[in-house]
Image (tube, rainbow, N blue to C red; front, top):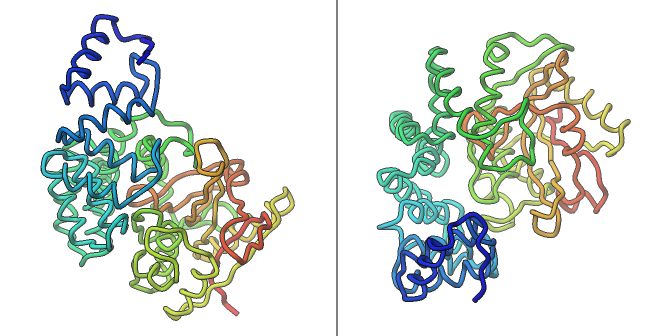
Length: 409
């Protein structure tokens, strides 16, 4: 076994390798993490997995979570949620991260039948063990009533726990609770704190690392405070407040549609909207099925598409602004291209809920980020990402700018 050290002192690396080779499980998982992250040693995912497997077989909870997550993501090994959840179950009583991941599996029907109450119990256990993201996820579920009955008091308690643990999504959510209560100084304090936890840019970027998303959202929310208190000015500015739901595993389409449906008077959640479609929970959803589901809840939506060129973007954004000026949000589909995505690309469905003409910015309501889900995006980025050729059979493989709007005919 040949490994090349980069910044890790040679003696420290040698000691770690020696202890791992002798069967010490803590050293094995420590070495696995360094190999996975390329920290002080040449990155080697396959070798990292070998050492993690050894530690997991010895009963090390951190290693069991490591291996389970690899199977859940399909990283290095073939994706297998059933194997993943088995590892998480073994580790969840000792590992806060495994408890969080076990909750994710129950919430998103990964390797098991969906059980949202059980997911929330594991998230609450993980929160007690110090996992801030688990506290934040549970808080958002109780706040929106996604998979469980709404419980504002418990949502607040869990949001405070997440913020106490310095979780950026928890700080975003707690800040929003303060904002809605009119406590602007407290909201600003939480969002400012969150915005400093990861690198941010002038506005959000759809393809930025997911770990930066909550910090960026907090930075965007600080810029949006005054706009959210203003009345819309057709042609210049519009903002539509939407009842945000944080999506579960691979459920952006149904959740974005549920947010849209709730705005128009329904009480449906993301998972219940998904259950109106034929595809299984935890899998992508054809836009044709989403359109059919809107009829099942008594709402009349229509699909509109625009060409992916400059002329099409002008027509698409004219439509966007017209709808937003009328106080109506719009559902859109994004396409991401890059080697980090399976098969070179990925898609994401979300809402556009505002624009600021003077700054050439648009406001998104994104189910993938923390409540309230608001993000700023430049017109150039919107032009680049608002396009899709795989939103469903309706696309017929043709690249376009698709959107759902309310059909007022």
